[in-house]
Image 1: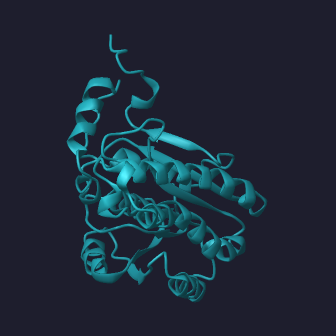
Image 2: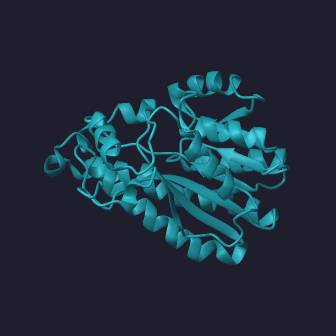
Image 3: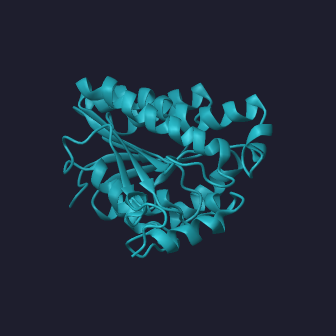
Length: 260
């Protein structure tokens, strides 16, 4: 199996329609041992979603912006497994006033929150898990991205944070390569997850994808994105790092107005 024997941390599971939940499902089906993370009031949702996986994993508390939580997670994994083979970073958040089309009016503290939670947190997770991946002889980190080469309606400072996330991916790949730790990002097309639906104007993304994507894109199907995450967490991509892999039906490759 693709991930047989792998010990993986999957963050960002809230409901069973999320990319992270499907990534956990595929990882378990492909032989991995998985733990999930959650925090605050949302941890109950994570625990409910965990029950619907093929094997119910433990849920460990992790607020990525709380250093003590990251330390406790690493200690738990060290005692549980002794090492860790990889993780999916599916963490993103922007305050309401950082989305919705009021880009020019967003206060600096809201922009900073979007950056810290959605981009800097990838570094936090990587550094926290690094000793455990060193013990494993290397590992793989994957984060979830969204195309930010253009300014989207209403996406605003989350788009800026995603641009930063891509840069963080490249710098982590540079600095962790000596540890044989691969660091990549998956740039997904729009999916109708709970998180995505909270973005004002989400329906506009679907309309644009319907017009431009060479392959028919299904906003209700996170599985193709989750499958790519599983591949990048596996040993089948040993020389791939610092990469932004698009799983968007080919949308990124086709210019606007280029339909045949």
